[in-house]
Image (cartoon, rainbow, N blue to C red; front, side, top):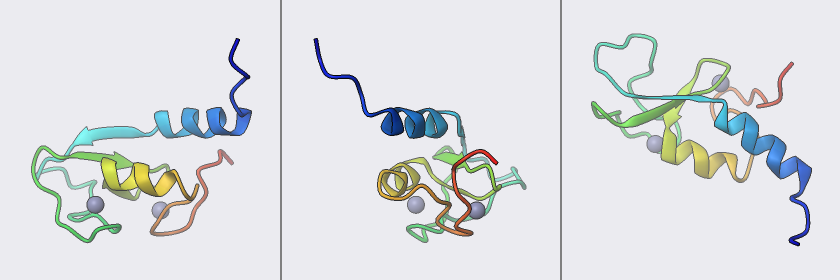
Length: 82
Ligand SMILES: [Zn+2]
Ligand SMILES: [Zn+2]
């Protein structure tokens, strides 16, 4: 038997898994045009993840960020539900 997972890790993983990721479309006006973590423009078809605050980032950039911090890189809003 493996030791149980740290409940906090599982909790955050569930929150991260609940974020909506979609492929960037140039005609999608709800999205920023670039990622505020790496400052690269989004390219059509790239996976982009939306935070609950409405900000969005490359899925890969955001998952690296969220492994260290549990806040939005742009507005610092926490991932925790209100
Ligand atoms: Zn990025
Ligand atoms: Zn934000």
